[in-house]
Amino acid sequence: RPEEYKILADLSISATGPVGSVYLFSTVAPEQLDEKLILMTGQSDTSVCLLRIILEEFLALRPRYLTGEVFGPVSSDEKPAAVLAIGDEALRLKYDNTYPVQLDLAEVWNRETGLPFVFAVCAVREEFIARDASAVREIREMFIDCRTRGMKHLPEICEQVARRIPMDCEACSLYLRAMEYDLGPDKQEALERFFTLLIRRGEADKMALPLKIFV
Image (cartoon, rainbow, N blue to C red; front, side, top):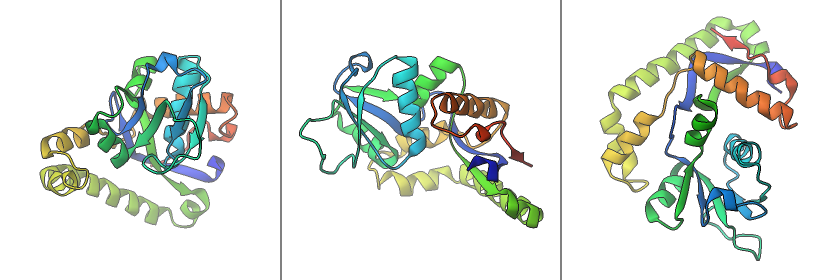
């Protein structure tokens, strides 16, 4: 219910170009996925919507979709031709070379629209803002401070995170530095473009626009 929320200014998880952890892994070229079965992670509605926009709006394809676990059993006798994976699962698949075609969804979005892609924002219910706006501003400043300190300590963070994937520290550093955490005018324009497409497709409420930013 977007009409009940405001977005906190200058906070997001975004990418201008490749994000490195939201991929369509495929056995065939994307143009050959028409009517093919695609397994989609259930971990991110945003990534699912982005994939469908890329395939259906940008490439004019009509694949079939199945939601399930990327590394779990598939509830279908037909083997999926492609898999949508995000986060750690995407990083693992990226480096094990199971799929010959790897499509970074943020990179495709950027190529088609000329805009970054915003994967996540911080949103607060308007009723809470009306009750205690100063507390919301304080929380926002804490997030911004965490972002600043995190970027300063990126080598230490990479040391801890890389082993879990697993990946080497240099690759982990490049991955984390490719992400962007602001919500500048270009990111807001990107959000508006994304919501416009979702509204047109009947996948978002028209009340999602215009964006409501809390400063």
